[in-house]
Image 1 (cartoon, rainbow, N blue to C red):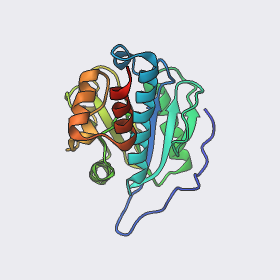
Image 2 (image 1 turned 90 degrees about the vertical axis):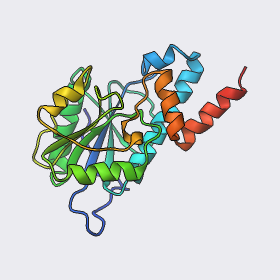
Image 3 (image 1 turned 45 degrees about the vertical axis):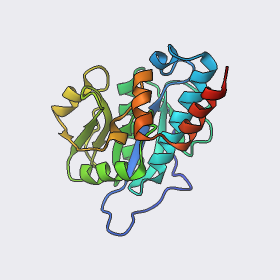
Image 4 (image 1 turned 90 degrees about the horizontal axis):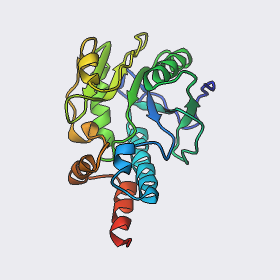
Length: 222
């Protein structure tokens, strides 16, 4: 994993804010990412859609006032485009090991910031929804937001000095609930996309600009 460096756009605390956050976003390299979604789309549409969902998710995170910096945690070297985030390549295999490694490195470099991991497939996420969750998370050692099903986890957060202890995978919400406080959250922060049905739910909520454009282009393709 590469060393992290402060980003040019990293910002300090806004008035009245007591804690800022480093947000870790785990992303798998294409075309292997989102395999269940890929089953319902031609290969080129799958790639375009996943890239758009990621771009909208990262844009919403960066626009949240509580977020100081975004770190993409990648399973392998890949071109994630100009998303405005630093990319690190994990050394340890597996989602949880990679996030734990990145969290430890971030805690060393930015010890006064909270650390949160957030899934990268939230096309309906709005900055104010993430801000509300992170402000609530600042009052707890560890906290989490379950996905729409109540089984998975979209957000896991830890205050400075507290290990993140990610335990993603099937049934992660129950595991995170054992040592974290569950936070209330609006639909956009809970609506991750693994299947075509998930995408329909996000469209009903309202997706970001990039995702909307890609979905519109699909309607005009033969």
